Length: 127
Length: 216
Image 1 (tube, chains in turn blue, purple):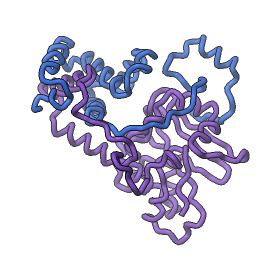
Image 2: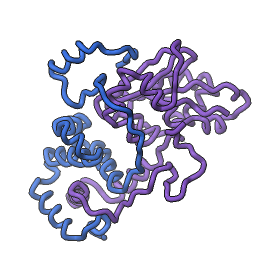
Image 3: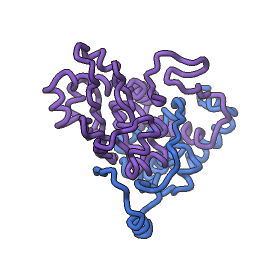
């Protein structure tokens, strides 16, 4: 889709806002200055990214399935959670739906992991 | 340009990309980190993934950087036949140079004297990640996603790029299936330069459209 850089009429924006635009469809809305802070990706974020790519490649879910989960999380999740927090939630939801493991198995494992130690490093199985 | 990551010096306590180092393993364990560990362990135990596959994928992603895109741009600047192939099918042309583009449908859009291109993903965070690596944080923000399509010139000024009025700005909205890369215009005064020298002028932001290549 190509936008030509002309302003969108406010009346059109209002119309689309009341005709079913979902929260993630942000193009053309008002917003503040672009925040320029960046960060280097941490190991856990890189692992989430790798899980997303590999599970997609293995046919366990599609990019559309991921997007559906991300969009259904809603705007509150977008504001409160970091990017890869939302992604691991979406990956997990799709994997549970695909039958890769059960929610019960996930819950038990997360509980077990909490007991391993207070930091990400110490919580690894081999940590 | 403040957002350019091709700095050749590092500040004390800053990473090579100019950001503060973030502790990976010694911050309090979060709920979502626990979920990542659990998902990864379960996927390995159930035989869907191996630790080696995960490590290899992280390594492959880490190896992708704007330098890959810069090499493609420099080739297009020096080889008119390659430039034509790139503009026709950027995925195929990038593969020709040995880059793993995956199933990505990549489209190169060319900046000229009277047209400037800018890429965004208003719906999420689609980015030519197989060529440029992971997107910068600002690319995924509400502010950039919302405003890039409505007031691109104002957004570009925040990036330090003030385009003259006679230059048309074309904004390309990416999707999961269709991703763009900007082919910036070759800077003046680069006639005698070889491909490697030219590639060093090409910044990440110049391939997103929020910046221009360095001048020699």
